[in-house]
Image 1: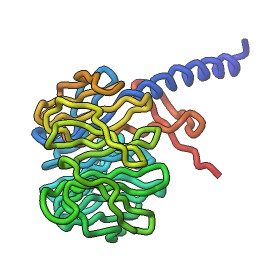
Image 2 (image 1 turned 60 degrees about the vertical axis):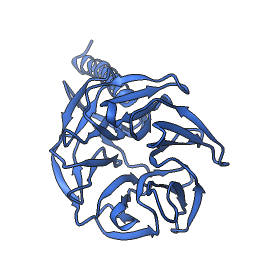
Image 3 (image 1 turned 180 degrees about the vertical axis):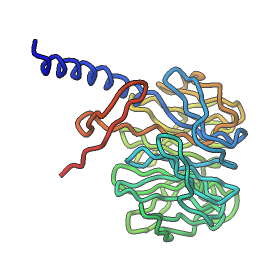
Length: 295
């Protein structure tokens, strides 16, 4: 076989091998903020936790942008840190008032539950800041549905709008989606459009359908904070006071996925591009991918 063909065959085999690693990481790995450790932990598909990025005082919301950078909210410092895939950190935003949940929209804008001012702030990718919506009652968790509407959990325990979930349209119009809850914290949508909400007072996670139907999904937790889904549809819950992350493949049948995180708060799965939208550049202990721009 000519040398050039042998090289191409070897490269093809390497590409196949490397993509299998990326697919495995995408299906299992996630990142969780650890309140007691003042840090973010990466958790692999086997449940093993390791340090990632810098020390962050009272880390709360975590979210990935489309380029794989991790954003971390610090409740006490009032900042949002940006951490590259290599772990290098910088300050993306400062001067916030007790930020909790954070989330990205489809346009790459970052939304922050600025609990101290009962508002949700919007940051463009360049860092320009504006108030997206206000009038909440201790906004805590944020989640976007498939239609681009933002859902906000109101964790305040007294006054108007407490113990409820607000729905905010893309234009900023706020309505009440669900009320009479038990101190809602973190939220996440499943593939079918149902909203899953961690309830602090009942140590449970409940499912709310788009029509408002309400049912218990997981119970027996210990001060649940963040929730997130993997690509297989399994739900992960940060059980803060139990120092563990639990995994639920179906209602009520959860198991401990990782016990290596001290006081976990929020969760985020890493963003690995789909096979059709990446070019493999190198592999050898590190899988390096570059996103192709679609026309």
